[in-house]
Image (cartoon, rainbow, N blue to C red; front, side, top):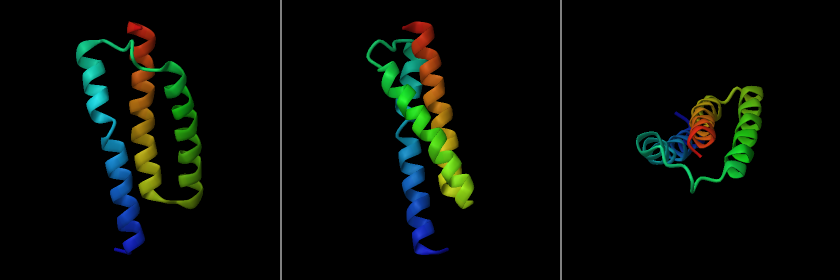
Length: 84
């Protein structure tokens, strides 16, 4: 495996996994008051753009990481809308 691909894959894995504790906490407690709706909206738009970029480059680390992170971000937006 190319060293740059390994670095990109590791970076994608770590940044994606960084969302897991927040998703678990928000899902479990249903407390989302401290989450910024605007921040997660901007993040989601950015992730969509990263996803388009990754698809254009045919870069699996970019595609997978941004797809999963987008799902996490959209789920947090859903919880924020639902619980407040």
